[in-house]
Length: 262
Image (cartoon, rainbow, N blue to C red):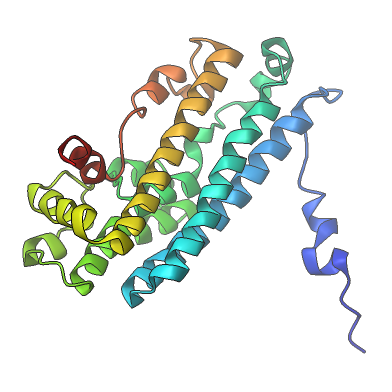
């Protein structure tokens, strides 16, 4: 006889709640918070990828209302990601240092889902793939994303479907390359903003997404600086020094470039 579905069995709570295993002796009180926060981050990254893959399909279908609705959900999740840093910052530098050595080579730099998110948004880096062991889950996921079109490519196809003229070279660009500014695309976007408020609303949601990612990066950098200062990051990364290089780097540069011309 089939067992009745319960809240615990549907969510697999026994398994989920067994995954928080501190490594420090004692264990140190704050290690539990550190583990839970980062596991929750990975769950939210999974959901954001799920939603942006849906956005890709909606853009392909020209379903503007549903795309805007889905983007509102993604933007709300990004606000949650930022607010989680407030919780992490309740941990003092000394409290973090009480278990930091137990992390050994483990680092948030190794989050393949965040690298997937970067790839999906158009920040492609083949070196990021090689940081993961061949045949590993992360390596396979990144290799797949590397060869797939980005949200920006889906948006360009959406513009084409809405009647805007874009060259075959632009529509068929090499998706393994990062998104770069395009004078052609910028001229089309200026026309959109001046004459087509419905399509311009889609553009603005992409700007919101870009700004939300930049906000998360900035808050993440400040959290790292607040916790470990200029120390090297776990896993041998350069810590806040590397993170600073990711700031103020838009994923959709054309949408920012046109601002001075509107």
